[in-house]
Image (cartoon, rainbow, N blue to C red; front, side, top):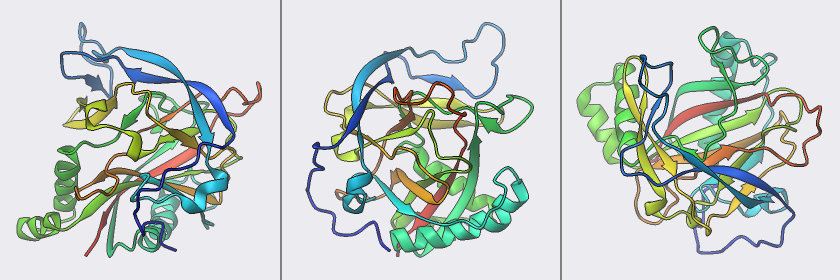
Length: 289
């Protein structure tokens, strides 16, 4: 079940149903963007960037999902049943879902080694910053890693697993990718669905590296500036037995998709009483050899 093969220059047809929605892009700035993951000290803003909303078509990709490739568009979609009963049970996620996801990623990518290094639950109705680890949907166009931080985070995660520096150096010399595995965990998603930008429509100059400040370290992510050539897609009403893959980094520079920007958005077709989105994303490292 590879969603990764036969990378060719074949544009996705735009003769698809779509919704129009406002997406928040970084306003171009001279300084490096900085975002804190916690409330910073007094006098320091949570973020030094400003964002502009642009109204764009977001195409329903369900009818063309079989023609979308992770290595070309930078995202992919498949049906996948999970045996997890309760995605709010941290132990069950690690005991049941992590092994399921590892096998699925090997099948989808033809990768030989998969390292799952964290996960995020999102539910605006249950998110309590400082009290639990559940987050609200992220409604700014972004990519989780940069050309630099893809390497630094992978090295950090491998070292944390007791792998020595020589072996890490060897692994980082072969092709690897950071791929998010995203899915609904309860009802079909009606509110704040996820939109993904075709990697082929993103220029390198659209990507702006910014610091993501944690209490114990500083990561680096890409904010994204507006480009009218961006092509956005989504899979409406995602179900619990469906999975979306998002390429957040690829070490290869030979034409494969490297970065697929993404964001939650306010769907104008959502019912007024739609329940908050409940979703989980795993962040994973896939090695190819």
